[in-house]
Amino acid sequence: MTKIVTLYLTELLVWQLKRDKNPFLAQVVEVLEGAGWQVSVTSDAVGQKLRSVARPGYALFYEDEPFHGRSLTMRRAYLEPFWRLEASAKRWEWDVAKTEFDPETVDPKRAAQFGTFWRKRLGLEAARSEGFIYVPLQGVLTEKRSFQSASPLRMLETVAQRAEGRKVIATLHPREVYSDAELARVNGLVEEGRIELSDASMQDLLPRCDYIATQNSSVALMGYFLSKPALLFGQIDFHHIAGSVPKQGLRAAYETINGPEPDFARYLFWFFQMQSLNMWRSDFSERLLARLKQQGWPS
Figure (spheres, rainbow, N blue to C red):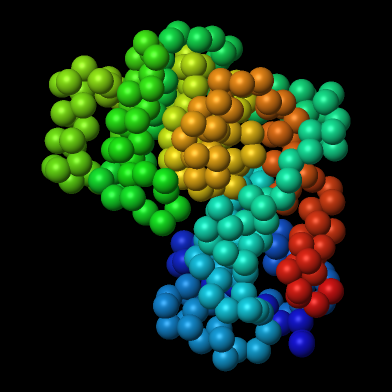
């Protein structure tokens, strides 16, 4: 098939790209055009995305679901400058989620340097343990969704039941809108003395907690930079060294977080540097084109 690709972007992203204010998209366009691709940009309105089925060539969506065989999604891998090109918008369906982590493939010295750099960049203080479990809540607290092993509220109750003398400190997501019924349920647990509700930041709570319990919040991934174990009640792409209730069951997941400490430093290097596209690296162009070829696109 002819090397034609259309990028489907929001108005803001189109504006940024035209004014060279989005380094990632600018590099993607430069690499593709340099490799002989004919690149065009259009709106990500529903009608435009539906037309991508009939248009010649391939489609790159920005964070949206790639719904046909000639489309992929571009999505940040949690931290700038790390990105992924995937055949699904669901992080737990990404290739990295299905790839086995082998710490022996990672240079420990480079991994340690990587961790030191990112702890400073993220503004994380030195890790310590103050005897509490940190539960960063996300959205839709009363429903169990398809990627979850329990609703967030049921998760919170379970964590409180198994706290073994630790405090449970929960936070609400600052960008979520919660219903009165959801807030009433959370406040009920507070009134019963089963949890504490805090408005403290991740940078405050993360260094001080014993471990993180969450559905699939990226706070758990950031906790790896401080060697904090994670108990996950939802599917996600950074499950490999966590206690994962969906993959292991509740008992085995708890055994994992209470067991031998995983190699957090090597995992983070593997997850970010080896499994994603780092636009700061000199080999970004080669890795981007190799990723497209891996997904069946012409080279």
